[in-house]
Structures are given as C-alpha cells and as structure tokens.
Length: 303
View 1 (cartoon, rainbow, N blue to C red):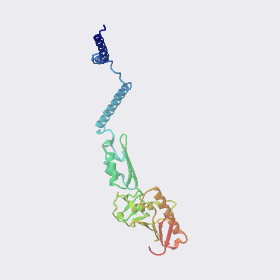
View 2 (view 1 turned 90 degrees about the vertical axis):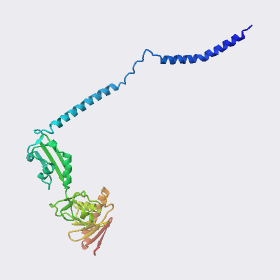
View 3 (view 1 turned 60 degrees about the horizontal axis):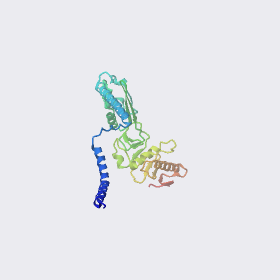
C-alpha cells in the first residue's frame, strides 16, 4: 500500500526547499558583505593629482618669494635716504611742458624738491591733481628713471576757437580751457547760454559742439574760406560771419552728432557754401542760406 501521507510530506518539503534556497544565498551573500574581510586595497590616486600638487607647491613658493622681496623693497628702499633720491631737481627732473605750463609750476604741484624719494611720490594721484588744476593738459605721463631721475611729458590742448571772451578757448574735442596767447586769427563761438556759462574744464555738446567741429574743419589745407565768428544760439542752424561782413546760415544732417557720416556731410555742405559764395553770381550777395543739402540760396536782404 502506497504511503500517501509520506509522499505529500515529501512534495511539501521539496517546495519549501526551492523557496528557501534563493533567500539563503542572499543571506549568505549579505553576510559575506558585512563580515570583516581581509581588507580592500586602497583606491589608487588619479595620475594627474601628483603633478598638480607639485605645481601648486612651486607656485606657492614663487608667490611667497615675490611677496618677501616686495616687502623688503618697500621696507628699505622706499624709506631710504640714499637710494632713489632726487638730489638736484634742476638736473634730475626732465620736464617737457609744451607751450604754456612752466616746469616750476609742475614741480610745485607734484611736490618735487631736492631730497625727495622717487617712490614717495604718488604718481597716479599727482597726475590726476595736475590734470584737474590745468584743463589745458590733454595728456601727461610721469615715469621714474632709475636710480634718481624723473621724466614728465605733458601734451597740451590746441585751441581751435575762442569762446566769447575772458581768454577762454576750446579744442577740437570741445573742452574749454584758458589761453591768453597764440589765439589771434581763431574764430569766435558766440550766442548760446551754454557758451556764456562754460568754465575751464567743461565740455561743449549739442549745437555748441557742432560749431566747434565746423570751426576745426576750416583749418583744412583744401578749405578756401574761413569765417571769423559762428553763432550757435539757434537750435536748427549755425550763423557764420566772414571777414568781408558776409553772413550765412548752415546746417547738415545729424549736425549735433559726432560720427563719420555727420563729419562728411558737414564738410561737403560747407565746401558747397564756399563755392557758391565765391562764384561770379555769389560775389554780388551778402547773405546765404545753406540749410538744405546741396542747395545754396543767395539773398540780398537781411534774414
């Protein structure tokens, strides 16, 4: 007789064994992971780390060396009474001042005297002070010439027109400054309130700057006529006055802007005006209107 109960127990045992086998393997694997093993080998350092550490050490050493040298230089040489000292400011200080500023004035502003240490002079600060006190300076360079000399080169602004009265003039950039000599023959810019209130160091703009640009253009070698005055008080045109008392209104596109196109149109309009004034018909008239591109009108009465 077949043992039915035994067979059923055997089948249940086989099923339980199959289910328990994977779990036991997992448990064994996890236990192996948790158990203290013989120890893993440390992960190798990337190949690029060592050169980088070496380079950092070298750069750090260089930085420390430079800082140490600079500190020693600053501590000793800046305060030295023997090295880098201007013993005679008449021979050790070379100054190219241009046309109006005197070397003595420059030395006074910069604080240059006999016995002064070159490195005790704050060059950038003194340069800014000098340009503020003298708007006629366009550019200035100050350089130390070791061991005990100083060189100063000053480029002054060149006046191209006078501004009303009081010795005020203006350069091609529209900067106002004072010049009492070498101004004869320059045209005079008049008319607007901005011109009347302009102080040395101010920069003109708008119609006043248009007048400056036009005044600068008449010094071109190819220019055939120069006006003696330009009135910038009108918002749409400039009024020119010539030595023979003839007058002309002139305007051009974008006349208050400073760019290549506006400059080209200005020169063309002015040259056309001069050609109209100097031809056989134009010589008979005293008034001209050049407000429209390529069209010049002559008038016999005031306008």
